[in-house]
Amino acid sequence: MTERIVQTIRTVPELRDAIAARRANGATVGFVPTMGALHSGHCALIERAAREHDVVVVSIFVNPTQFNKAEDLEQYPRDEQGDANAAASAGATICFTPSVEEIYPTDFASSVRVRGPLTETLEGQERGVGHFDGMATVVTILLNVVAPDVVYFGAKDAQQALVVRRFTADLRIPVEVVTADTVRDADGLALSSRNARLSAGGREQALAISAGLQAAAEAISDGSATSPKDVAAVGVERLRAAGITPEYFAITDAETLEPARQLSGKLLIACAATVDGVRLIDNLTVIANREAATANR
Ligand code: PAF
Image (cartoon, rainbow, N blue to C red; front, side):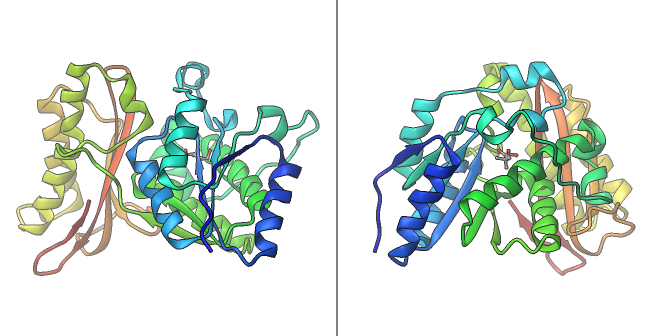
């Protein structure tokens, strides 16, 4: 049984009723949470969910509590109709587009916090742990109202996906968390809703981010770097050559996000940088200490 008629729903009771009706017919539910400005990366997640489930719910909600800068929230691209069309074409069944008041009523007073390096390093250090509190809280609310079998995240936000895995396990939220590979343009730039704000020159400059990550991964696989510090230096050099000073260029354990002490096991190479006034993040996961280290792009 496969249903592909997109329905836009704005309230929690209506969403619960719509999903319950489909569940009653035996449907399984895949869920793709988004903040809109859908690009091919989101569409790949929706298409995968549509291949794997009868019902695909896509939430489109620019979550104010995960932004640490008011101007970043204001400038976040919004295109409800374009998003609904893109979600429908990719195979969504339901678009959930709640108002801020629907998610956070005036008496709302709760928060979900994951402690430790998963939230305090990298993005947590740069944007403040409040970013992940806001993300974890809204994703918990969305998981509670959608109650999907599987929720899909992109590997570009690797830290976010790890945080979601942690709190869904800790809070016993009965959902499978899938992290799908980052979708890139042919020249390597990781797809992001923020790319729309890059000028042509800024986009060209931003290519140094994926190139820097790739150079760092190669320095591990060809043995030319022998410590995490050397690997980071290779990547940073590539960014600096393009006139970019990264906020961080880190080599960490891919599961715990603790700084890597040596080049072995599954490592995350993660970078954040502002290019052309647009803050971008990207990462690669590599398996070190193998004859040929493999980079998961
Ligand atoms: O990755 C995003 O777009 C957001 O962080 C998410 C998961 C939709 C929560 O607001």
